[in-house]
Image 1 (cartoon, rainbow, N blue to C red):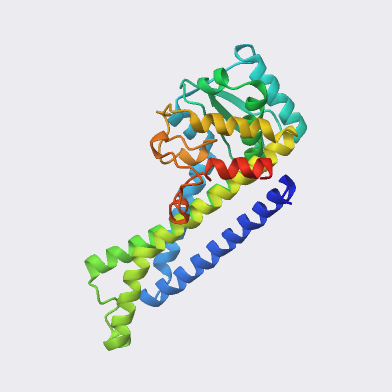
Image 2 (cartoon, helix red, strand yellow; image 1 turned 180 degrees about the vertical axis):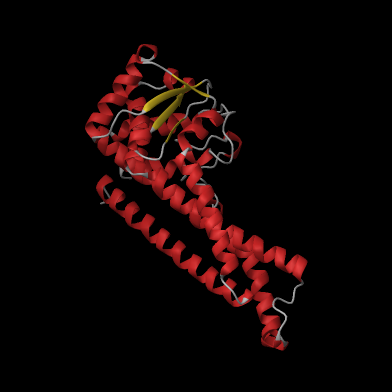
Amino acid sequence: MATLYSHKDSNIRKTWLLITIFFVFIMLCGWFLSLYFGSPVILYVAIVFSVLMSFGSYWWSDKLVIVISHAKPIKKEDAPELYRIVENLCITAGLPMPQIFIINEQAMNALATGRNPEHAVIAVTKGLLSRLNRSELEGVLAHEISHIGNRDMLVSTVVVVLAGIVIMAADIMSRHMLFGGFGGRRNSRDSGQAGAALMVLGLVFMILAPILAQIIKLAISRKREFLADASGALLTRYPEGLASALDKISQDPTHLRVANNATAHLYFENPFKGDRRHGEGVSWFAKLFMTHPPVEERIKALLGK
């Protein structure tokens, strides 16, 4: 029978397997581009640019997310119960106390970010504080603290870098085909059938590579959500509280107005209520493009069903 421990170990293994697949995919993309252009220099430039951009977003992630979400810092006297829960969970997890922010929204949600535990941030909405009981709130906060302890911001940044490299490489390919002609390299090696085959492969790469990169990135994100659920439940020793919070939040019709596509994956649960999809009626294809696992699957994993 599956347990929280086996779920946790399984999701760690699956995360690293997906990242390994991503690295292999990047190498294949690099090999193809070096073949197509006859030089890997363009890909190297794209990699450096993508890494620099992602490094900046990683280094200042806490500030960027707080500004985007319109979150405001609070003191201990403003929300003493919230502070006590976070303090107790951090002591149990062996993590430093993060900064706590409030998002002035009635939708029930939360997020955690920061480049490391020493620079971590947890933000919760007013709706979450007012409409969850203590055990449910503790479950949600334990999930977010687990993201910090599991270094999910670092994993997410690595994945964004990898996806960015693929997307930029495909963009370079599309620009070359648009402005340089659809014949690829214009020399004897590219004449005849070989040149035509290379052109077809270039078109396939240009279309499919960004889609595959996005699918792998989202798959890793979903596995980290399962991992944070398991880690959070083990932290509180009460998975029912987190499962109840998930059920209650998934039924909430209130839209989180401050959320956008850039920050949606950071939230505890999908903030776009208009895109609410549940496990039983979701096809495997639709799941490929979801930022969060279906709520029913998360609850089943927590309760061992």
